[in-house]
Every structure is written in C-alpha cells, then in structure tokens.
Image 1 (tube, rainbow, N blue to C red):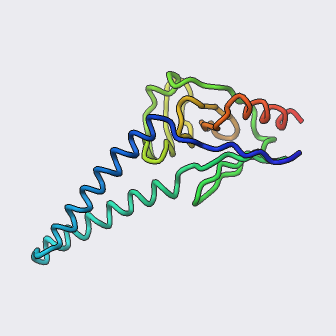
Image 2: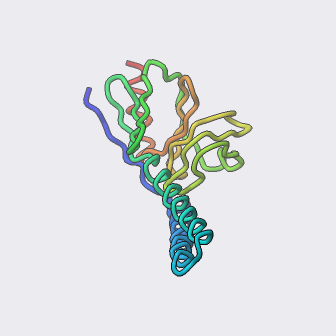
Image 3: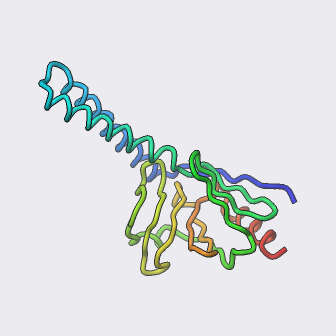
Length: 169
C-alpha cells in the first residue's frame, strides 16, 4: 500500500487570526526598534527584550504548525517543520468526522489558539483532554489512539476512508 499525503490548509479563522496577530506583532516590533533609537540603556534593554520575545513567539508558532498528514502502511504521521508525530495505525481505535460546534467551548491548556493553526493541548467537556493539530475547522477529524487528537486533512472524507482501510487491514 502506498503512502498518501493530506495537506493541512488554513481555514478562514486561522487566516484571520494569523493575519491580525502577525500585523500586531510587526507593529510592536517596529515600535521596539524605535525604542532602541536614541534611548538610554534601560530603554534599549526593554526594546531588545520585546523584539526577541516577538520574534520567538512567531518563530515557535511557525515551526510547530502542522503542514500535512501522511498515512503509510503502519503510521499516521502528523508532519511539522519541527517534531513530527507518528501514531501507529495498530493503536488507533476510533476516528470520526467532527463539526466545529463540537470544539467550540474547548479550553486551550497549552499551545497556539490560531496563530498558524490550532496546536497543543486543549480540553472540552465532550472529549476531555485532547491534542490539536489542525488549521481548518471545516475539515475536522477526531482520531482516538493512546491520546485523543483532532486534525484537519484537506479531504476529510477521503482521509477517513483511507484511514479505515489501513486500520482494518
């Protein structure tokens, strides 16, 4: 069986949040640089610290974003620029299509709430603690294995059919 790749495309919410946050942080970065011009040492330190913090936040969110999901013969792979995640198909004991309402009251415990996607640990009354690796709430798929995860492959129906065929093999 060949490996299939499913892209993680951004939905409207992630596009909006990322655009607003990156714009605001860019403005803050420019303001930090202005603080550095002609400032005394204490203001320079504050400006440098703000600039480093802003760059760190954006880079961490960017490199932890999910780019794609791969199904091979033995694994579901959640690809990220840093720290891809492999889940053995044999450990998967459930999967289903979700709508956005099912996660609308979730609480983010740690991670990104929309900057380059939703990534990290969340909690909801419906699913308990779960791990999010999605960027498009129109394409949500719940996968239950050792942990509960929510992803958003570009073609969720095709992904679920492919996953079902591989898990039941």
